[in-house]
Length: 220
Image 1 (tube, rainbow, N blue to C red):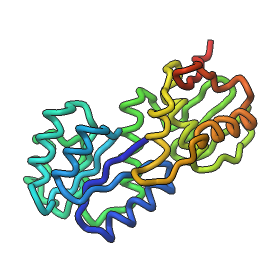
Image 2 (cartoon, one colour; image 1 turned 90 degrees about the vertical axis):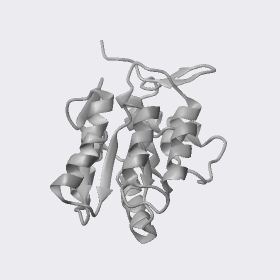
Image 3 (cartoon, one colour; image 1 turned 135 degrees about the horizontal axis):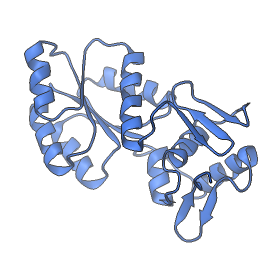
Image 4 (spheres, rainbow, N blue to C red; image 1 turned 45 degrees about the vertical axis):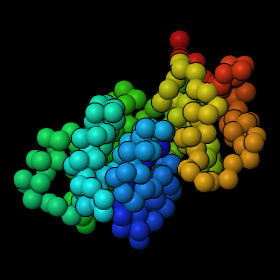
């Protein structure tokens, strides 16, 4: 899942980006509202984490522009404004959730998992396709109950395929979910990850749709 983090506090943004990446998210960061809106217009993320106190425009103004562009895009407000009236204003402006600073990272992760379940229509943190199960909370993957060792990129790739079981995901779509802006990507990186997953989970688990991308078949 790709997150757009809109935060002008660079130490906080850097720390959040590092932690969220370790927990299976691809995070792109911008420091102001203008860059946020440009990013959403050019490459919409799966979620937005939006600070209200931005240097160029108020976060609620940014939120209203986001809602005008993509009404269904999940937005979590992350801010030091923690009064009831501030929370009400944020939610009434279209925010899906609100987290006041300072916060516990585990609470933020739990709220992001709620977003994931909502957009993927998965009812729990456990996703199962055939003999393969993936837990988005424990970051564990099992084949017929046996724990499998996956790299971070392999886990990210598998999670996106399993969340979208039955759908064909293009190469560009999958790469956007694996790599953040500016991250160096080898031309065959995606194919290498697919190869490794097939070795661990079965050669027929991931289907190649020639000239288009990859998909997982729904269980009969």
